[in-house]
Length: 216
Image (cartoon, rainbow, N blue to C red):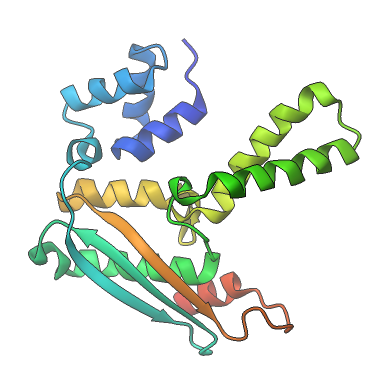
């Protein structure tokens, strides 16, 4: 049977399993994600799902200051033990997350943080835009749903494409680290400062600047 690409993506993000394993799991379970998770867990391939319920109360608070001093980020990333928090692998991961936040400017960690009021407001704006574009009313609702999904991808950290590897979301990156490190990992919160934010100023492409710094 045909495998839904969106289901593969979601299953990878929720379990940390490889793409081929996710496809096989969905084929075996008729694209039922919950059953596919059980399938992967039975085969020992869903490391992230096995650890997701465990308490992660240790970790690091990492800072990143862009080289020109105009952007600063503080992020808290949790793991289960002080031992893991002190490893270079975990430290490098947290630094990557801080750098990504500086470049991509998310507003929320996950879609669960987005208020219902904000989503309703966004839906009203998107509905008006679609109608103004002359779209038929009967397809506007589906268009708005698609654009809301894009909204989450743009502003929710876990759903953004990782700046160092755009084929992965931050959620996928987290689950990969859970699989390799062996502990639950959670990005708890962050704050991003931009010099002169809210004031009229020259527009800069900070994503390009941060990537240039990474590559130097």
